[in-house]
Structure formats: structure tokens, C-alpha cells
Length: 331
Ligand code: 173
Image (cartoon, rainbow, N blue to C red; front, side):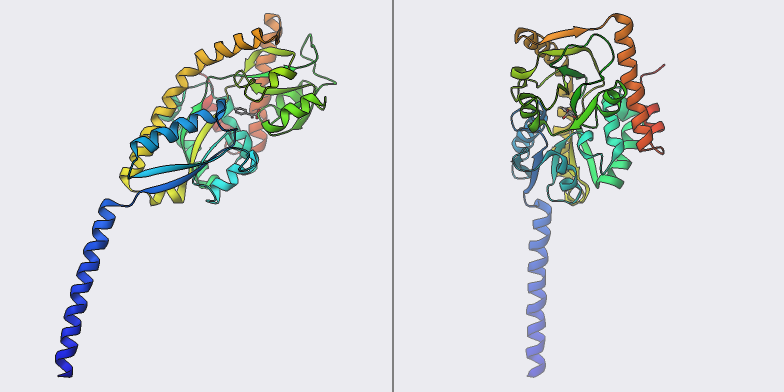
């Protein structure tokens, strides 16, 4: 009797096991929708968050029932210089930021500004793969898409200059501009973009580094007299994903993200028109251009790259020289 009962229980147990096994299998096969948390180091709905915002629209459209993104927002949610660490440690799953904002974790990331080859080329010539290894090691991350490129930086001023000497000027910087502006004699102070307006208004700085686009986003045009030409480098903003989060996604979820990333990187082609439009808009707003003679302009431009690479190599003697080979234009 006791034996029969035991037998019945074990048959029941086995049946239950199969039911659970089938349910579990079918759950994995259809996989639940995953929601990822995203943050931007730039203010929401401004130039340098647009790449992420488009990415989110694409993923949320194509990824219904598969993968969705919850946009936490910009610097109101988290200080820009902390976004890299939040991504690395998994506080957020996706981040829109620029290399200069997480040089504390990965100094090499600031080298993106020095690329003279397109992302398409870098994905073929090994440059992207080289960086990808560093992103894994130092950031616990994958760079899904560079969404800003072909977008030069400029020096914006409230005092006129006539040559390459910036002695006596105090300039707002990030690591992007530090070595270059200091080499020209400037005193520098690092701030997040959100502090630039007040710094200009109070006369704490005489100018700032920023790309050709986005000056109007936070109303800096109200406090800017001059833009120095030529521009230099190529601004980089990219969408990163935490590696542990990525590894947990299934193929279908990864495919949705990869497709949106590919589209985002292709959108870089829109910057040429954007740059031209913003140059005109600055002129119309009364921002005067300080233009150097061709020889001085060349010296200025060359100095930007020379000091930029020297800075990257100083901070990363191991990887800097290799990145220079991958990133520089063919001689
Ligand atoms: O000036 C900055 O804050 C900066 O480094 C940057 C980088 C990429 C895009 C816009 C700004």
C-alpha cells in the first residue's frame, strides 16, 4: 500500500515535471519582452541626444513584444561625467555619451575625436575592433553606434584674438580641448555643458570649446561674440550598452538593437548639412567669425592634431600609437 502510494506520487511528480519543463521551454522560445534603461549625457531633445532619441524610437517601434527602451533622460537624471561609470556598473543598460566624459575609466575613448576615417572604414580596418577590446576591458561595454561624426569642434570667444596666442584667456573645456588650448597658452576650466551659460554670463570664462552645432540648444548664442575658424577634430557621441546586459539578450533582441544601431551610424551623413545650417544661423545671430590667414589656419589646425595625439599617447602609451595608425587619414 505504502509502495503503491509512493509510486503514484512519483508518477504525478514526473507528470508535473514535464508540464513545468514544457512551460519553461515555451517561455524561453517566445522570450518575454525586455525593457532596457537608457540615459544621455546631454540634455534631452538637444543636438547631441538626438541620436539616442532616434535610436529609441526605432527600437521601440521594431521591438514591440521583443525589446523596449525606457528613456530616463539627460543631465537632470545624472551628471554627465558619471554616465560612463553608471553604464559600466550596470546602473543603466544603455548610455549616450562621448569619450571625453569617461576618460577616468578609459582615456583612449577621447581618441575618437581624432578620427580622420569614417566609422565604415574603421569597422573594416581593425580600428573599431581594437577599440571594442578596450571597451570590453575598461568599460564592460559594447559601442553599438557612433551617432555623431564629421562635426568639427570650434573655439568660441568673447574677446578678440588676432593670432595663435591664447595667453590670458580662461576657457571652458572638457578633455577634448585641454591639450590644444593649453598649448596655445590658455588657462582652462572643465565644466559640464550645463554650466557653460552661467560661466559665460558671470565672466568666469572668456570662451569655450564646443562643436559647430548645438550652440543655440542652451542659449549660449546670447553670450557668445566670436567663433574661431577653422574647426578641428570630429565630435563623437556614441550609444553604448553594458556587456552583461547584452549577453543576456537573445538573437532576436540583439538583431533589433543592431539594426537601429546601423541606421543610427548611417544618419551621420546628415551632419554635413547640419554643420552648414548652424554656421549660417550663428552668423545671423551676430556671432562673428575670427578667420586666420591660410598659413596661420594651417598651423592652428596642425597644432590641434599634434597636441591631441600627444595627449592620447601620454595617457595611454600602450594603445595611443596604435590608435593613431588606425584613425589617421592615409598619408
Ligand atoms: O564640449 C564638450 O562638452 C564635449 O566634449 C563634447 C563632445 C561631443 C559633443 C559635444 C560636446
